[in-house]
Image (tube, rainbow, N blue to C red; front, side, top):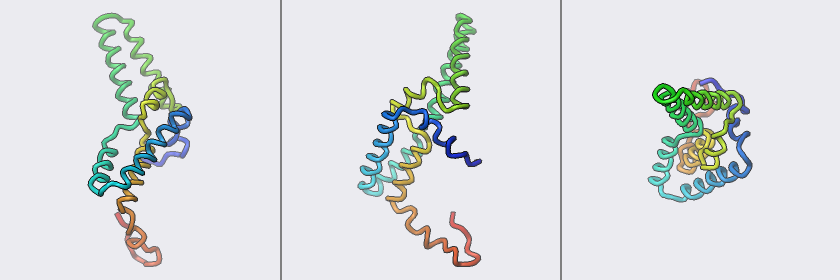
Length: 151
């Protein structure tokens, strides 16, 4: 995967209303506080859940493809005017690809759908609480020549 510039990673956040950002960030902080105090099995389950959680890109792509397909099928089977739905949805998807915003984004963000980066923040914070990174500095000592990197 090619690293993306910082502005590309946060382009959805940049186009999210301050109220939605506050709510999403508060939820993430609350989750970290709550699950950080739970037994390891509960933290493990939460991390697994976060790994399966759909991010905003996946939700948007699924929504767009279902609406575009619906418009195409209805355009073929009932009335050609339904092709406008397909065209509109594909236009919105293109707009999102180019600038990181399209009309459904504010709705999904108000519903709490997070970006992959936002999901990763919670996941890695819980991994740190769980102790996954506790021995990283001991496993990799730059002063030791010939030592291979972990992982």
